[in-house]
Each structure stands twice: as C-alpha cells, then as structure tokens.
Length: 508
Image (cartoon, rainbow, N blue to C red; front, side, top):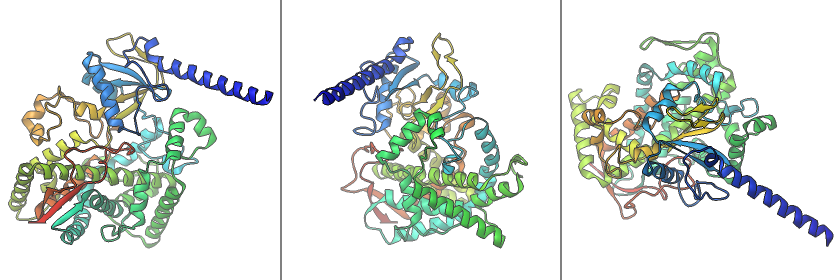
C-alpha cells in the first residue's frame, strides 16, 4: 500500500512539474513584452486544434487575424512548449526573408545525413552545407535546362490525354489522376524511368510518393522531437525518414546510377545533371552563365537526397495545385472558357505547335495559376530560425537565438487588405496592372530571398503542361460530389482537400 502511495505521489509530482513547465513556456512572450494571443491551451499553446480538427492554415490564420485586428506587426505564440514569432507586417516579411537573411538563413528542419541520408537534402540543410549545395544545384534549374526537359514532359502529358479519353462523360476523382500524372513526370524527369502510373495505380513510385505525406503518429512524434531537440536527436542518431522509403530511394538511385555509368547513358534529366556534378565537380550552363562550383563534387548519398527532395517537392505540391485549379475552373465556367480560348489562340499563332515558350509565356494561363497559388499555396507557411539574438527593427523587442519566425503565407494570401474579397477566385488580380498596385512580398507561394524554392520553374512548367493538355481537349463541370467550398484535410502536411475532388469530364 505504501508503494502505491509513493507511486501516486511521484505521478502527481511529475504532472505538477509538467504543468508548471508548460505554463511557464506559454507565458514566454508575455514576460518579454511581446504582443501575444491570450488563453493558450495547456498542451498545444495557441495552436489548439492543429492537425486534429483544423488544418494548420486555419489555425495560423486565426493568430494572424488576431494580430492584424490589433494593429500588431508581429505576435508571439507557442506550439507545445516551443515559442514562435509570427510576422504580419509585409515590410518585416521582406526584412526577414531578404534584408536580414544572414540571421534567418535556416529553416529549423532536422537534418542528419550521417544516420539519415535522405534528410541531407537542400530543403533541410543549414548554414555552410546548405550554401554549398545550393551553389551546386542552381545551374540545374535554369530555363535552358527546363527547355531540355520540356519534350520529355510532353510525352507524359500525351499519356495523360489517353487516360482521360477512357474516363470521359462521368465523374472522375481528379486528385488521384493528377497525382499519377505528376508521379510519371517526376519519375521520367528525375530518374529517366517510365513509371506508367497512369495505367498502373499500384506503382511503387506512387506508393512511396504518397507515403512521404502520410500522417502517421509515430513519424510525427519523431519529427517533432527531432525539430525541438535537434542536438539531442543528432547525438542519438534519430532517423525521421521511413526505413522502407529510404531503402526504396537509395536502391533506386544506386541501381540507376550504376547502370548509366556502366553503359554511358546520357539523358536530359535531373539525375544526369547531378551525375555531372558528382563525377566532374562542375558543369556550365551556357545560357545563364551559371557554373556549379568546381572540386566540390557530390557523394552518392548526397545525390540520392537531392533526387529524393526533387521527387517529394514536385509530386504532391504540383498535383495539388492542378487539382485546386480544375476545381475553381469547374466552378467558374466563364474563366475556364476564356482560358481555353486564349490557349488555343496562342497555339494557333505558333503554327499549331505547343512549345516551351508558348506554355510558359501565355499570360492568362500564368494569371490563373498564380491565383490558384494565392488561394491555395501548397505550403501554408514559411519558417526561419534566428542564428543569433535579433532585435526587431523599430522596436526594443528581441527574438532570442534559435527561435522560429513564421511567415504565414496562407493568411497573407487571404488578407483582404492585400487581396479584396479573398475567397473569390479572380485571375485578373495578377494582370500586370493589378500587380503594380500591390505591395511586393504579398505573394509568396515559393517563398522569397536566397532560400526561395529552387525548383519553381520546373513546378510551374509541370502545372502548366498538365493544365494545357487537359483544357484543350476536355471541359470540367461540378458533379453531385463536388463540395460548395473546399475543406482542407487537417492531417495533411500540405493544403489538400478532404475527400478528393470529383468533377464531371466531357470531351470537347
């Protein structure tokens, strides 16, 4: 009986310590004089509901709106026991992402290439390692390199067209179709492998692509721990990459590289460009004068990590953007018809040929895609971590070293101050005239500054090729299963609709 009493006392003591610790952490910003949203949840701080009942985009939007309503340029808040600062002022956004980049060069992601090879990718790397890798990869994403991949992408688009022809005049779940299309594009442009996912929905590429974004509890706990306690996680050799996923990609890259080097295979794809860096240390991009730094080379694991992030970044995000775009075009038939007419006119003017210049230069297509990215940015936020104590310009408030600073992309994109009637889908917001009226740094789907998404050109090309292929031959209408308003899946890392996207498809 005495032992039970001791155990109960110990439990009560531990709970009391945990309670006092969490309460102390949630008062972190208030004690430092920062504006902060009141009444934090004991466990989740101001992010209550995140990942369970609400998508993170909605939760951060609530914090943003709270600050804006009170005229605050920034606001402190907490998630679990992690203190964060959200930036609401656009000039301050520019300062964080560009002007004071030397303080905000890291994303706060966990990376330990020694025990978790695929975590050593450009998105997660920090400091000197990130800078070197960025220099190596920059020449691979010039417009000249994109043109080289354009023909390959058109071949996959032709398969998408064939697939759609067998599914017309009925309701079709477009989220799945587009995920298969982007899987085939990435498989071909990254690895030079024909995945045939459009015809084979059980493809391993698709299986492992989706696995990256699965919201598994243990994986989320591991990632959260690794980000909160990065030094400890590194010492413990914590792996955040799924073991099967790691095995699949490492084997795939090793086997493909070995085959190419043995048979001297050359292709216009991402892997071939990385092999040039790996084996020669550099290559020159004539068109834009970029040269990957000489004598830096790349290990096989580094190469695999970059191919992995290329696959991950180009798979789900691009398919989701196309998915949301088709949803809006189905709901706004006048916009759909105008876009189709302008696409057909541009192609006719080019002697009926669909070229890189036509796809990337068509103005209204660009406006439609940008408006989709405004309303549905794949990543709802951009995070930076302070490399040193940082005094916010024009104030006496100091953000301590190693604290996360959040730029709430989704909330800024839906702020009526920047985009009147933000729920309305209006591509004319991105006409040249309207863009001139708007403050810079209010459109951030790819981030900004030196850590802006390096694959932006590829992503935009993939989205535009997919949309042009579909809209030239098919009309899209809402079906009985099409929701009046999109609700985001709370458990999805990126913005993704709950329950898919069913549209009625008709051949033109």
